[in-house]
Length: 346
Image 1 (cartoon, rainbow, N blue to C red):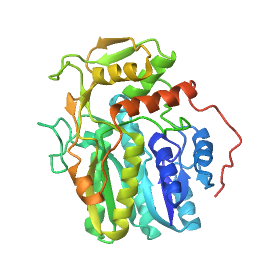
Image 2 (tube, rainbow, N blue to C red):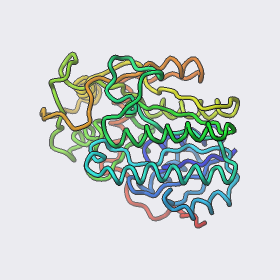
Image 3 (spheres, rainbow, N blue to C red):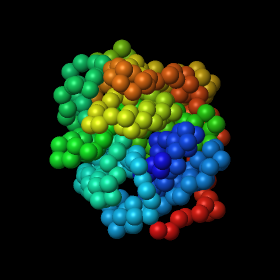
Image 4 (spheres, rainbow, N blue to C red):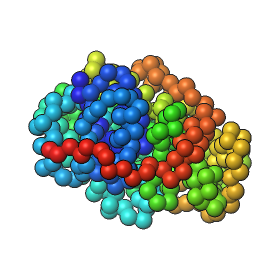
């Protein structure tokens, strides 16, 4: 069974590729490399001992996408590709709407043309907006507080409309909470271009000496220490949820939504203190004003995924910090540039 993985060179996509290969799937990876490095493809092959084709294709390029689908007999798609920084989305919203929504529409149109109608979609807990209470379950009202979140919410609605129009589609909408950590080997991990937008890679870059100090956005939230509370989930747990969702789609019709989180909320300071404890690295930080689009408290009720998919997160916050530091200290400059990979031509 061949699975197309969009955004396959990125943080979550690369970890999903390892899990897919280790579980007997054939894969084709697609990524435009706008916020990922080609070296991750080499590392996936190294970790699994398996080869697979990779194409540097942008989902906005409909022609190249069609050529790819004509070449391979895909059975399903895992769709990770997309711009994903909350702060950046506030600054350049049109880029986010065009890239994330148009790219997904192109993908779905080509999937429909080639009768590939199983889709695991990378959504986000940002679709819950600023929830009135926690933990958050899948029945909560939907909204968004920033353009990134609105792209995820709009895509969810598009996919629901698509299913209404054609009930032969099988779709899993996976709402991520806050993925952190790295593969236990330390060979693949989160490696953003430029200044990190997410908390954990910024912490690890401070620890390795690439950044001088961490800015903590807001210390006046209604939480136990004033800093924002999030549901941090190990990236390996997260991608194992994708495999469970894929297996579910093989045996069940319809469109379903699942939270992928641990069900436990930790504050920014909790994460900093745990990282310092696990790694013995000092993380200097300063409090600054709240960031536009951020909310105070967000953590999941993951019971549906446990009941329906047979999935639940297993790794704790200490393991998330340990694996992040293992990745960062073994790759102080992230992925080194490599030109020895075979770029497949369509």
